Length: 241
Image 1 (cartoon, rainbow, N blue to C red):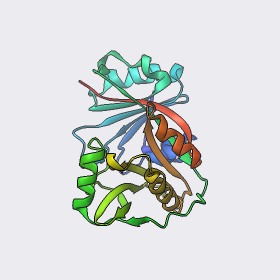
Image 2 (image 1 turned 90 degrees about the vertical axis):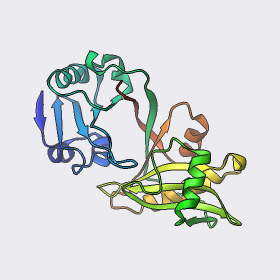
Image 3 (image 1 turned 60 degrees about the vertical axis):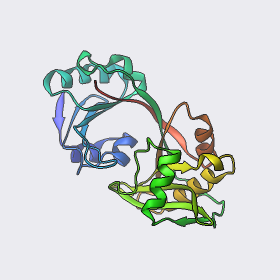
Image 4 (image 1 turned 135 degrees about the horizontal axis):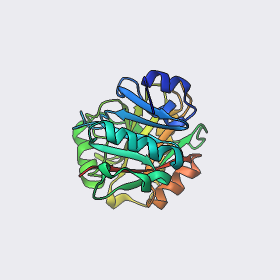
């Protein structure tokens, strides 16, 4: 196991999650062994996290001993995210009650569908009401750090759908918090918002758009695939008990 700077990891790694998601300003250190890496990250989804998250990347055969070494030498993290294929190799010190399973998806394809109904949303109260009703567990909220814009569909005086665009350190645009009012589902509003967000995301320096989606959300995955997104990695994440 070798500890390296996150700047060095981002510069040398061929791992696309590292290049597009690991921000050296939020990740103070990393450990590598062969093709595996463990990154200490301090996420700021809706404000400062209560502790570090360990992001564990690479093939199971290389990642298992590296995670064991990190767990033995460093304090227990608040949260872990690990490649799904290596989940069963988590060290004993990182036990937890339950883990989510999610896909990390990317695209560089420019959408062609027009979205004139989608506008930039600036009223915080409207966004809070929409999220509280349709997506209370969203990691993206109106005051979340890193949000470049909220785009949505307004009908009359109601915000019926919206989503956020985070701009990553390398210019990648990350779609987050896409929400449709439960009473307005099955009208294609999620596709409209996702299309507009993807178009804006791709305008960044990396020419890449990313998102995370739970693997049991088949309708959303089909929508994103129609927009050109492809799953690059599948992860398991959990808050440690």
